[in-house]
Image 1 (cartoon, rainbow, N blue to C red):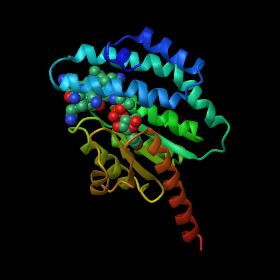
Image 2: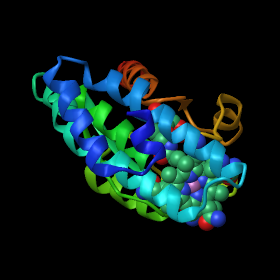
Image 3: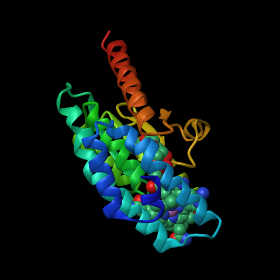
Length: 217
Ligand code: B1M
């Protein structure tokens, strides 16, 4: 699986995902232990100048082909659970990386969250407008570039400007993002991967419930 991503081979990535499901492998294990390490290898080779932009794009295509097989299986779990909360998700302005964000969305859906994915290159204003429209509980902002991380702060500010910050929790993530950065920009939490994003979203929903209880006393 790892090699199919490094080679940018969508057909192989897809057929290995089908084989994995047929063999009873948990889809999230295939993602985390099979395909994602391939993406990390691609990133390292790109940084060393051994791979170029078209190679990275081919690897992203292979990752999408694997996810097309695994995603429905991951999502199935979500339909068996009560609705856990409404999440507006997206990749921040200036940034077109989407694979990690899609994975986070899939895992949240699998755990009962209603996820509205705004896609990539999303401004703070669009996050805020969607959060207002859907009465979102959580806004999730992904950033993969050190140059676009700062736009996560723009989302927090846009929510503040729209008077929504009291109702909406903000979670951030992405390879260059850290807990310290999340604290610095006034976000409510940081998750390092899609599995911990679910735990964080559940924790933020608990916090929201407790705040509502206190306010209604
Ligand atoms: Co880009 N890219 N890329 N790229 N790319 C990186 C990020 C890079 C680290 C590669 C490198 O140099 N080693 C580097 C960034 C350097 C930096 O800023 N520090 C980089 C660069 C430089 C660029 C361009 C500038 C290249 C250029 O044009 N010269 C360009 C930027 C374009 C732009 O956005 N404006 C660019 C373009 C691209 C492609 C389009 C070719 C492609 C993306 C295709 C797509 O998404 N459709 C691409 C890819 C594939 C990568 C790497 C190789 C892989 C990213 C990925 O999908 N990882 C990446 C190297 C790397 O990350 N190792 C790289 C797999 C994914 C599952 O992990 O996204 O980290 P990740 O998500 C994780 C966690 O971070 C977390 O959970 C996810 C699942 O576990 N998470 C969250 C993510 N979002 C979260 C949100 C949360 C919580 C957790 O809450 C809301």
